[in-house]
Image 1 (cartoon, helix red, strand yellow):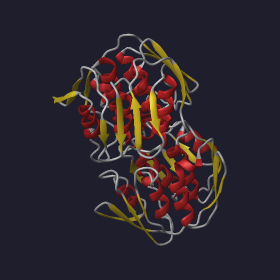
Image 2 (image 1 turned 60 degrees about the vertical axis):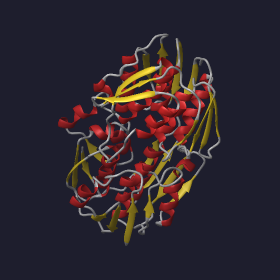
Image 3 (image 1 turned 90 degrees about the horizontal axis):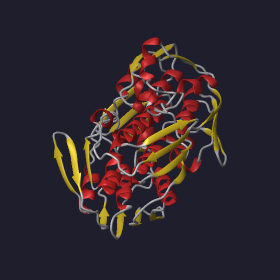
Image 4 (image 1 turned 135 degrees about the vertical axis):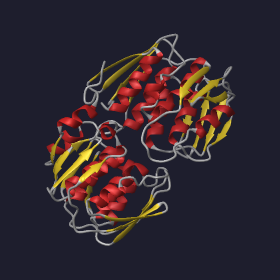
Length: 428
């Protein structure tokens, strides 16, 4: 991606559906037997392509058109997942719980995805074991069996989003009641709860970190909707902040990004917040702030790289502490190439604000790091080249088109076109 930076962005962007909400809802279709699940507002992304292909490999029929998806799951499905698909994406682990609940067995290679430190699925496996599953790790693959899962009480040592979703889906057919404690409270969790309820699951989740699931015998055809992508929306708001522009992001739920909006206000950003949209106005140079990533409703780790770009240009010294993932500072060396002054001390980044960034050749090491480098290129003087765009297309639909529409000077070079894979058109 070639970016000629230094231009204020001005205009309106409509948020896509949330990738991190769509993927677990798609995985939930595995629980259906000879039924259909219709999902609207599905984003057209590489991770969605991978999940669709994974479901097809198990025997499902997946159709997609204009952000509407229909998944038909037959009476009999495969319980073995293809290594080549699973290793493309960490969210592949979400099929483990539904497969075990539906088939009584599952084989799944350890999943892939972003290279941002240790992201084990230990909590998933520990919870499934508590429910009566027998689990072995054989040659890098999880072999799970269960002669009927049993409801029980499970306390998560960390409020993992993936573990919460996996165990919740596994518990839908479990005998008796399953109580999950210290669960994740991200909005995407409750999007999945609503989808499962629409299918006939019996779930009580009130946002307190405790989820109760009473097992049922069967589920029915249903329709579900995907919530707006809070990370995508926040990324474009930060693009406005980094370029001192006026950017409106619409069709969103502002309280899903309260932590970011609060930090931007603390930094001196001028914003107008309405029921379904946020506008960031030209605010001059922002002031330094400090923050710590935490599980929701804390500051999202998925916004740490992007907010760091705005703080690179802020007046003063900011401290960003990463407490969710290890090694999520791979973008720092690339930002420093562009003139940023960032020093890593253990799990904290010390950011001394600079007056401007300069264009450079940079490498996207993961999805959100790639988005951050695009923002840096937009704010920088001269030309920036961002390589390895495939990471970006895993999470942002039509990013370059959306940014061009609000004034960005962006072009995709021929050598990077192949990185887009199936985006923006998902195979039917």
